[in-house]
Amino acid sequence: MTEKEKCTLCPRNCSVDRNQNAGYCGELSTVRVTRAAPHFWEEPCISGNLGSGTVFFSGCNLRCVFCQNKSISLSKFGKEADIDSLAQLFIDLSKTGVHNINLVTPSHFTSQIAKAIEKAKLLGLDLPFVWNSSGYEKANALKSLDGLIDVYLPDFKYKSPYLSKRYSNAADYFDVATEAVDEMLKQVGKAVFKDGLMKKGVIVRHLVLPGCAEDSKAILRHLAKRYGDRIYISIMNQYTPIDHDLPDSLSRRTTEEEYISVLDYASMLGIRKGFIQEGDTAKESFIPAFDYTGLENLK
Ligand code: SF4
Image (cartoon, rainbow, N blue to C red; front, side, top):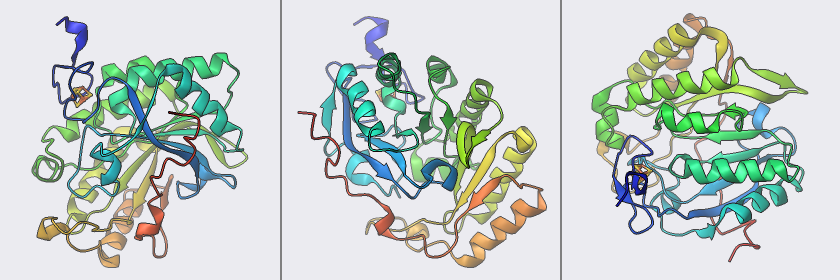
């Protein structure tokens, strides 16, 4: 096996030949997708009025115990797409009128997706591409996306190695995600908007987990100190315990008190560029149906 065939794309460093075996992400080298359709529940500058063109990929290299999309993150299904058909999928999706092409959980297919974006652009696709990731990805891998991705939309899940190990089996999450966001910001710079839509920039998402408000505050301190107003921060409260086998600490929703205490802290830190969630957002109905919508042209 050559070095090239040993996958070390992400921090899991599985060193498997993905032509033969799946690694921690659960996926072989051929891209698999589960849904391609307009989505209206992203931040307003991403969804706009016409929706964000989400493409959901099978598998995930992080696999949080509380994942809201387990049916796809655990690689239970997906339709295969080679580079040409993935590029065509982006083009077909653009024809529905969406504002951008939003690549959801793409990190374990970085090189294939980069080639498909290049191809789609050559064929005339002229929409912004959004990289919607867990943040658990190598800065080096992200370098191959320089000039191809317009908006980075990474999660920033944990400060505490204890929590990141316990809930995502990734004690190094904080350092990895910090280097990833550094690289993202280096590539796209400060945000650019047109008609209320983000055309370029970084939005870091943070989901407040039950019992973890102090960790949320530590993350906000870190983001504010390191990036100031060069990034947007989206503070989310939509955590939903949808599994029966979750640890006790994750078996309830985040309380309003917890969420407000984090928002107050963000305000105290002077964070003004960002998004919050209002109302009853913690509902399973915000989780789209992974029923191959938009994939009719794939085998
Ligand atoms: S992309 Fe998948 S196979 Fe490659 S190192 Fe990461 S988890 Fe392992």
